[in-house]
Image (cartoon, rainbow, N blue to C red):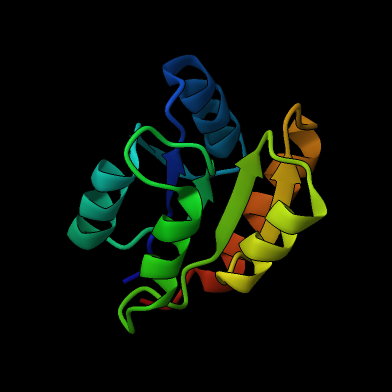
Length: 128
């Protein structure tokens, strides 16, 4: 399957839609999730080309979502792009340790985000 879906996991609905608009500008179909539980259900329903993931979610940590995605053979190839306000060395290290492909911080540069999405999601495009 050639998924062109990008799952945006961000609990702020307006920011989720904004990131989704950039995903669409980068050539992907935008799928929103406002918490970790919904994100994992969406991933189970249809494996996306990539995931843009906030770390501070209302029900579980983004680190936990990332670890669950990377811990399952069906989804471990899906690039996870962390987009968070947490800009510490410790958080960055944890993000990369859980398997994230990139760690971007808010506020973000839209061009950097779109280029990062294209680079990772296109690499994944023919898998899953």
